[in-house]
Amino acid sequence: DTEVTQTPKHLVMGMTNKKSLKCEQHMGHRAMYWYKQKAKKPPELMFVYSYEKLSINESVPSRFSPECPNSSLLNLHLHALQPEDSALYLCASSQDAQMTSGANVLTFGAGSRLTVL
Amino acid sequence: DAKTTQPTSMDCAEGRAANLPCNHSTISGNEYVYWYRQIHSQGPQYIIHGLKNNETNEMASLIITEDRKSSTLILPHATLRDTAVYYCIVRVWGNAGNMLTFGGGTRLMVKP
Image (cartoon, rainbow over all chains, first blue to last red):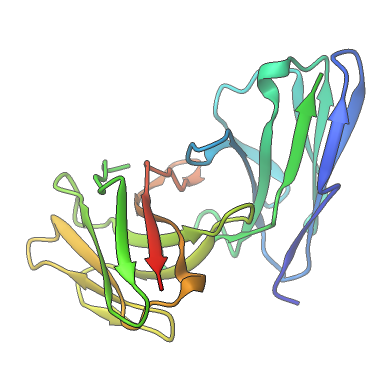
């Protein structure tokens, strides 16, 4: 299995809702990532998990709460979002975030498209 | 991460080679050059990476100049399916792990 699976593909939520985005990989990767991508812009890094521990938080607002229950799963919990948070949320995984070898390639999922009303 | 500069957009005729340039003049000795592409409404897809030497795989070739300040991604026989945004990324490792920071990318349009 060489895929990163993200669910749901589409999500519409109100500003008072609580929802979660899910990401799963079965490649034995020990690093997982969340990126946010606005329309016609490049992806922006949000969080990096390495060996199930949060290693990088790119100053993301607390209304986004990541969780890594095990080495195969990554969640992004959403609460009290704003309309400007509407975007494509991309999950990725790689062999090891601490590797210095160039072979630490990221595999991305297809993304979850979030609309906040 | 070292900054990269890419043209905003390029056109290529189907069946011809697509040559996508990237400038990374502030690259340091331990930084790799990576290329990813993103087809509309999909996640980014890894293409190729290199440090000093030219590299080739089943998707593309990567030519890195001797001073490493620029590189070119070559798609030898572009098809309509190669229409995408191509990102050139120079990645460095920090204490907390490695981060992939995307620049603006080049929007490649392959035309019949």
